[in-house]
Image (cartoon, rainbow, N blue to C red; front, side, top):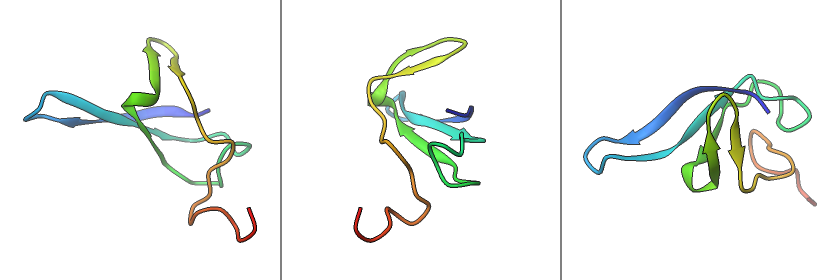
Length: 67
């Protein structure tokens, strides 16, 4: 899908909110889009991140009209 570039944390609550992914595959997202994936969608983290779910396609300003 892309490369994990950062993780968003709540330092007070000591909890991860999500992972930030850049260099996203153009088959999944518009060119140059950086994606924030909610941590609840993550199944496992290692050399590869496994997700429980993910949208079919990501658009910079939301889906085009009619989709």
